[in-house]
Length: 427
Picture 1 (cartoon, helix red, strand yellow):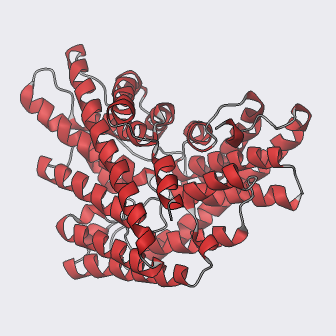
Picture 2 (picture 1 turned 90 degrees about the horizontal axis):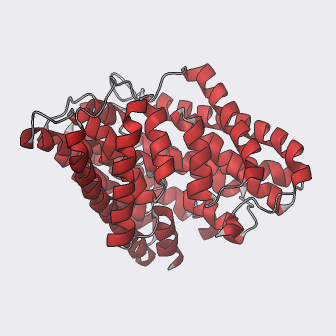
Picture 3 (picture 1 turned 60 degrees about the vertical axis):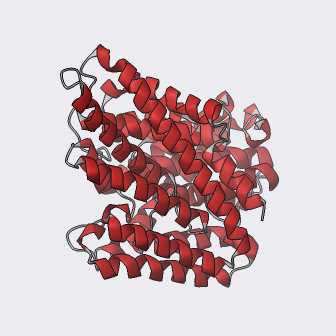
């Protein structure tokens, strides 16, 4: 796996790469601001209250909007050359592995339009997958424009990935760790300076537009008692099972997509999202409003359980069959609502020692990311930066490493994007 990484970057190129990293971060940040403005500007035209308020739609709209979006994405991508349809994190990893870190402009444009359609239509996808592709493309295309060697292109792709995650979530540290742990698959001291500067510059730009508030506004959540630690382990194990199911279903549906024309797969994916939304409208869209409600303990046990199952199903079917959106956002939603449900159950079992359901929702978020992505460090840094709550780190470490161990050792799962890459390559 070291071939994905940054070791080939010559030390004497570091000052120049650092400047390129700064420019890449600003470019990726600007692209993400424009993408977010495009999506949210369209959403507020038909959603009452705020851009994620799909819950306010009637039953017919909750079914027909995702279905129509799936048909639109399917028709759009149907007329593209097969190579241009490849988008998202898997496309970036493929470019690093097989194409010398060269990302084509045509695929980036397809990612922009397809992801915007999917998110606006309420599909169960996130914006971070498209962000990673678009950020990586900013780095790669800029490097190609200046005819930089492959080793330098790899550094700039890592810069773009880190900047995109930082801009999407307001999480610069998680952006750097995610770029190294999930996409590049290694750490390199030589590559850290430009990657860090890219994440910082992208964060500065997006904070100038959207402010410095964390993504989720929650009270200080903390472990109530050391007697809860065995239950934290149990929650991590349960979330690890859920993460394994997520990975298995996603790979299964991605493998089935080979038998279908792209337009039909995307349409069926949209129909699946609409069907799930009839039962639980919270499955639609990115779902950060649902995460925030779970962290605040505002959702009942039945709602939490229903959203966990239906969000998992809608995401794996939709993305597996070809809808071009991100997976990290849905993982956060599934982890938060599943963790919140387990927190309520724990309070019923041992009420005198139980922390709030919101605490377990936050633990569940990190455990789900760690179990599905096999990236516990990225999950922990994301938990910290998304909420600004340092109290979650040490119990979160316990849950995240347990979920990771259950997924990897018990269920023998591969990291999410590796499994998806293998399933799609089977085409």
